[in-house]
Length: 332
Image (cartoon, rainbow, N blue to C red):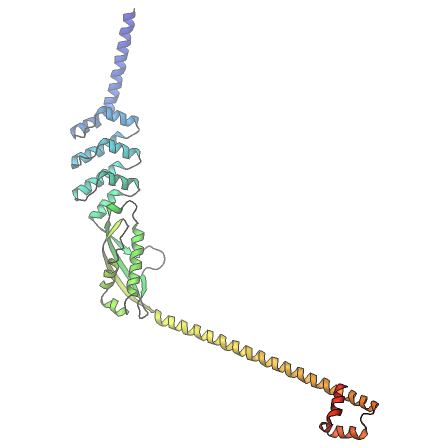
């Protein structure tokens, strides 16, 4: 009886193992055979463990086969798995390494994986290293002006369009400034180079002066690009900014002079009004003093200090009054 149960259990276990092996073999046989033929060195247990770790065996095998066939022996399956688990694009990184290897560009797996995890397209960066990109400065679709406007020392405005040829700097691709920074630096350098020229005719005669001065400043420092060349595509003569500024300054000076003249006129008018007010005040005091004369005369008549003859004499000649009597009248 016991032997029968053991026999049945053994048969059932063998059937289960056979079914599991058949399922695993049917699912992973193609990938395993492909890796075996390509010398990728990925066994059946590794394929099963990848599935258990939620790693796509198809992507790992494809990336490993591409690397081996391209002659990249330094990439193991563990690095591929860890990069995919970190959210990286394994196929894209391997293709970038293959392109860099064929173009004889120094790029290792760690650098390429870091660039990919940083959100940059490492394959596009390698392609840009081989085939440099041309950037319009300023960008045609950028809002605002479509030219770089600089003013020479003689006051003439120059409108410039430039084309910057750059290639990717793989060493600075992680943490380096983007394309917008390069365009901004080139624009600043062009405006500064125009401003340092003595007159606009020098720039029109030799536009390469701008390119040389801008390129000598090392504008690609700490960026993800290396500037190959800066070419001036077009130069147009703009307005006479110096004359306009002089006119504006003259008008401003004229307004200031008018304001100062108006201030002086207002002060003169105020002084005149003050003098008129003082004159009227003095006239009022004179009238008040003259109004007190009849009262003083009446008081002198009552007290007998003056008589009729003195009054007539004073009336016809007021200044002939003797000093003592005038003093008495003033006291009254």
